[in-house]
Length: 67
Image (cartoon, rainbow, N blue to C red; front, side, top):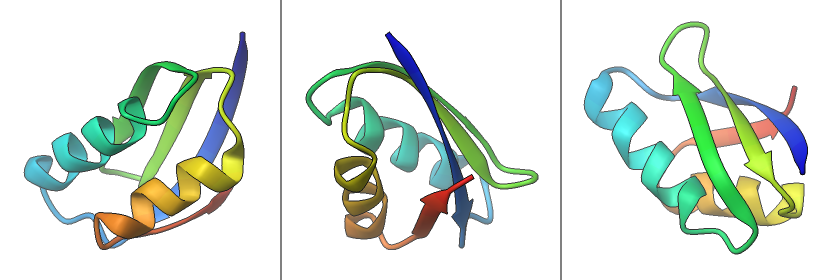
């Protein structure tokens, strides 16, 4: 199992955090995602490609990049 850290921008509230968490946890290979509003990031546990994780965040309307 790997930990992938992402920097996420555009989240403004706990609803945003829940939406991003759910989006990340739907990506195949993700076991668990921990998303924080401040400073705006995520730690994803599992074996998913970082490109797939970034795409999932962007589909929710936020920006993501490797941290």
